[in-house]
Amino acid sequence: MSEHEKKLGYTLRELRIIMNRYIDAKRAKLGYDDVSFAQGGIVHYLHRNQDHPVYQKDIEKEFDLRPSTVTGILQGLEKNGYIERVSVPDDGRLKEIVMTDKARIMEKNMHELMQADEELFFRGFSEEEKEALFTALEKVKQNIREEEDQL
Image (cartoon, rainbow, N blue to C red; front, side):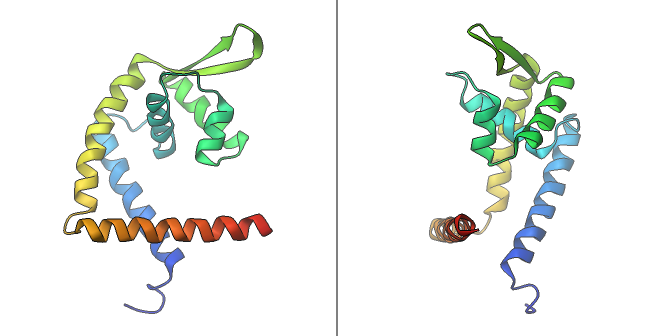
């Protein structure tokens, strides 16, 4: 492996590109090419949090995204019929983000694909190797967050 390939940022960027391309192709094959990777993640988040109201601020915090970014993602989901924004009775400015039936069907199909993808991604890994990878990546995230707080 060359020195260039040993750089963590480069390797993670390359991995993200390869994974996104792979996942985009699978999504398109199922007819969900109108849903971006980020939009799919938000639908999955809404699915996991169905037991309580979800607002744009919750999504911003969960995904560590700027309000303008989340607004664009939600507009796309709403335009394509995956979510609805429902006014809250006590506060007309506040909108609850609600999944549609179309989103529920898509989430179920994509969840099944993601389970198969996880098996592919970790093919040949022992449980110890998987745990070590996640531990190392969590350390990298923590290091960056600590440094980011200093900026």
